[in-house]
Amino acid sequence: MARKCAICGKGISVGMKVSHSHIRTKKVWAPNLQRVKANINGTPRRIMVCTRCLRSGKVQRAI
Image (cartoon, rainbow, N blue to C red; front, side, top):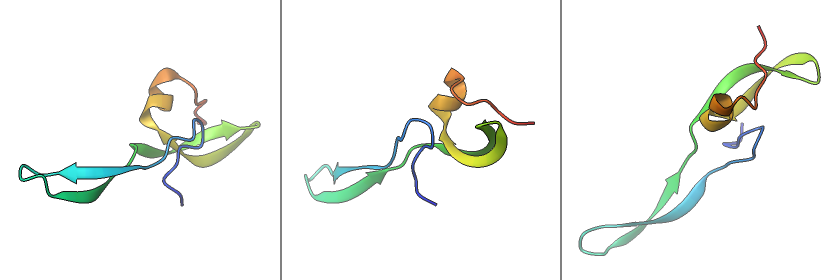
């Protein structure tokens, strides 16, 4: 399963971690994804959704 939100498409972002001595190494920031049961086109499905979409109400949760 990809590390990407099914609603907004937010995925991993990459950059450099810079130490005090300015040694640079690659770093990955992953979004906070939750596996939730949501209604997609009227049918309940399990999707990966970021917590911002959950909090803002963009996801209609299935019971």
